[in-house]
Amino acid sequence: MTSQTPMKKMKKSMKPAKDGAKKAPLTRSQKILRGPLFWIIVAIIAVTVFGQITNAANRYTEIKTSQALAAISQSQVESAVLVDKSQKIRLILSSGNTIKGSTKVEASYVARQEPTLVDALTANPPAKGWSVDVPKQSFLTTFFFTFGPILIIGFLFFLMMSQAQGGNRVFSFGKSRAKLQNNDVPLNTFADVAGADEAIAELEEIKDFLADPGKYALLGAKIPKGVLLYGPPGTGKTLLARAVAGEAKVPFYSIS
Image (cartoon, rainbow, N blue to C red; front, side, top):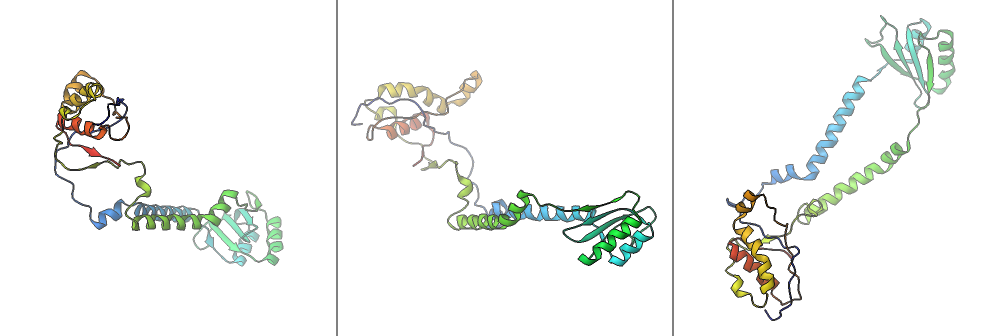
């Protein structure tokens, strides 16, 4: 070392070596199954199927307008709703009455037929009454249907571009970029570091923990998450870190 600038403990992590062979590389199908695009498609399919099942439970059987008028005139209707915007009349038939095997039916009508339907309902009011429904679309629904497809397409395009440029970089934010240079333990020791006696003394406990972490675990002691070697360039910070790894007989990780 060419400088004797003191080094302060703050944060520098080194991990003990892990036993076991390297993991086999993922196949293409495994990468697809683990990728976000696959799960987005699965979620879209699941929502679509759920929507179809929900709609099936509340579905009205389509009938002719003349059949709806006949049911109203014969007092076979329990309740009725005129849906103004979609120009449909929805009927729930009274007990024992069905049309096409269903008690929930609906019929479409044109604008000039609306007075006829209103007159029929007024002359033969259903047991539970009738009403006019004017559907109102919420702001969120309007926003979703207007900008939702654009946002989804843009997001999928962004994911595909990210994967084409070297994997799921979008979802790797915050992950450690530390790399193991090799599996060999550094040969450096504290004897190779000159002019940093105070820093070496403070790192003795770190070295001792890396060499024998089980001893500290039995005592219930907690080691700091790491230390930071601070000093101007050329003062031997990297050499000191390698010396700690060499003294503890553990691999050295590098990050840049």
